[in-house]
Each structure stands twice: as structure tokens, then as C-alpha cells.
Image (cartoon, one colour):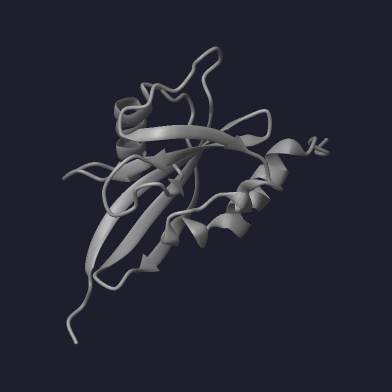
Amino acid sequence: MAALKEVQVAAALIFKDGRALLTRRKSGKFAGKWELPGGKLESGESGAQACRREIAEELNLTLGELTFLFDFHYDYPDFRLSMKVFKAELPENHVPTLTVHDAYAFADAQSIANFDWIEADHALIPQLAKVLKDIAAPSHNL
């Protein structure tokens, strides 16, 4: 059996007030499904570089500090998704401008599972909910 073609992508959990920015695909195979914004790495690009570029292209947002969260892999029937997930705070007084999506929403840890997610991203819900709970919880570090 031949190995699946690997598609490398970067995605951003962009947060504000303990809620994550989600986007809904406008067209293509996953039209109408929700996802973390992001996209494919271009040749020679790091995950962080791809994440910044994709968010600028898709949402007209310039992200500040990116924090790497985790790598995620998901096998579709025809390809293997390899995703690097980062978190970043929504820049102050910025509103996303949709270019390849038809809607965006903000979800907290409790509501994030209520969206009709793209299959691979659906598998991320427990990890994303944990990150959002951590973001929303006051720090108890001294």
C-alpha cells in the first residue's frame, strides 16, 4: 500500500477574551464547515511563517507573538494532514476581513464543540477547549 501524500499546514488559535476565532469555509470540498484559520506551508516556509502569511491573506490580520501549541496529524482517505497549531491574541481593535471564508465566530471552551467542524479539526476540539480554559483562567503563578 502506498504512503499517503502529506499536506503540511499551519493554523492559528486566535483568541480574544478567552474565546477563539473560528472561520467557515466558503467553497471547495469543505464548504460550510468550520475550522481554525490557516493554510498550506509554501516551499522553504516554517510553520510560524506560513501561519502569519495565511492569516494576513485570509483575514487581513497581522499577528503579534505566536506561541507554538502542538503538532497534529490526521489521515484522510487520500492524504495525510500534518498541522502545526499556534496561538496568538487578536490584535487590539482589529476585525477580521473575510477573503476565503463566508463567516467567522468566536467560541469559548464550552461552545467550541457546537460548530460543524471540518473532519480533521473536529478531532482538535478537546485540545482547543483545554487551551481556551487555560487562557480564560486567571494565572495563579507567583
